[in-house]
Length: 197
Image (cartoon, rainbow, N blue to C red; front, side, top):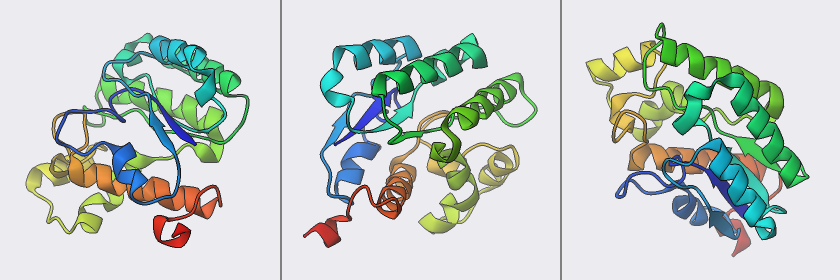
């Protein structure tokens, strides 16, 4: 079982292909999505406490973007509490989605939070944002626009891979689902759909 905890990274705007359903076509696993748009870290922890049946599974976390202004300490403490609730280390952490380019206070705060999350999660910090910035357009076969180039220079996901300032579009969600599938298969935690058949 794989459970997705947190916010709209898993349950974003309609029409953009949520990551868990895309992933379900790639790997042989029972997927449970508890992600809710606007969910704070506190709301996610409460959800975890109310669903002990979901705790034994592999866990993916994207939480804190909706309340990132509380700062790195609070968010890192909440992630640590989530890890304690899990009671195992079969987990991955997704970075804070940056919506403002490098040099802004928003970018710097998200970077500070990501630094703390990297320390907590180690090699289980899955840099989906970095993957989309560096590889996304090439993998999708999209020629970068001038805005995309500015976004990439500024350290944010290019506009051609977003449906709004913060959420991935269908193409980006597909790329993230493939990245997740590759990581899970490499660890031997799941099989690809074609291999499981």
